[in-house]
Image 1 (cartoon, rainbow, N blue to C red):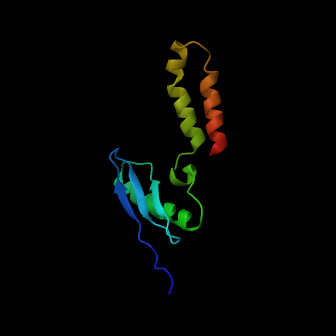
Image 2: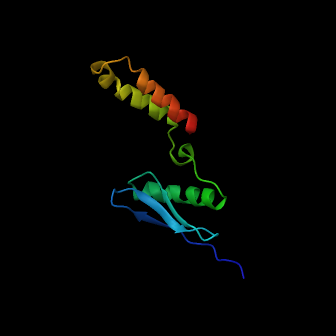
Image 3: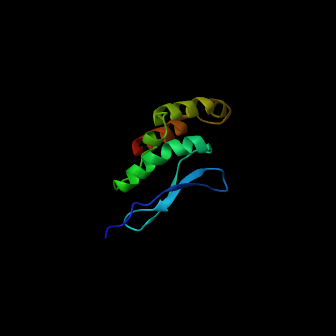
Length: 105
């Protein structure tokens, strides 16, 4: 007799972030962040996270969040401009961080 498909649920952690919680078909416990404090947004992301996990992979950041990482990093660099202007240096350190993160996502 085959194993029944596991039902996954949303669980809110103390930090306010919603997580997908359940047991995978191979018996592993699943705890994946939906990266949102909104229950509605978390419920929309739940099927994608479960599908990716059951397919043997993990949902990438760009598949879960609608905004491309490059745009988020550009916004971060823009908001950091004030800090860069008041700090020593030309801001190249922030650009190095951004290039590093894009490479892994």
